[in-house]
Amino acid sequence: MLTLFYALNTCSLASHIALEDSGAAYDAKRLNFADNDQRKSEYLKINPKGRVPALVTDQGILTETPAILVYIAQSFPKANLAPLNDPFRLGQIQSFNSYLCSTVHPAHAHRMRGYRWSDDEVAQESMKKKVPQNVGDCFDLIEREYFKGPWVMGADYTIADPYLFTIARWLEADSVDPKRFPKVLDHRNRMAERPAVKKVLARETA
Image: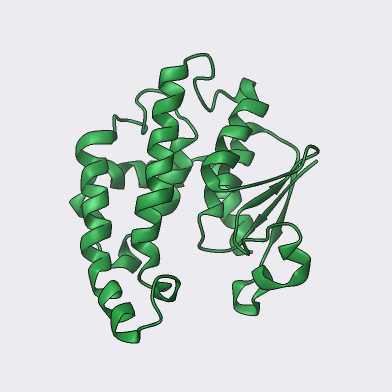
């Protein structure tokens, strides 16, 4: 049995959706960031980083969204969540998901977690002011260069789709108008209608 540790309004949503898409038997355990669950000793034994997601498997524990997503795709190949027999196309997915993880997500995180990069309150405020520009620039690049349509990688739904959906849900909170990116916005709307996505969102907000 797989166990996913997640929290509301975090990137763990992508892994949660992928698990549901895969048809895997899994348990989902919610951490309450308001109660600082991610810093408690019980969870730090699972993920010393004190972040989500973390996926407990029979072989050990995985962290970081791109790693968890490709693990799910490879563990449940019948779900067709990635082109596992095409190294280049799989590499493209990993490239896209790595961009979301290493660039887009940190651009968003500067809005509320500037303390990770500076102790200077003035610097933290400056970071917040740059968030709309930086996040907007990231999504402009996705819209122009990387989104193939109708899904991220083209005709086939893959593990890139729940990840983009997850981060695109933060656009308004980052003061970025999603209407600037019609392909991304259409993708977000279509993702929200998928049964697996509806099920996961209902579970997370219950």
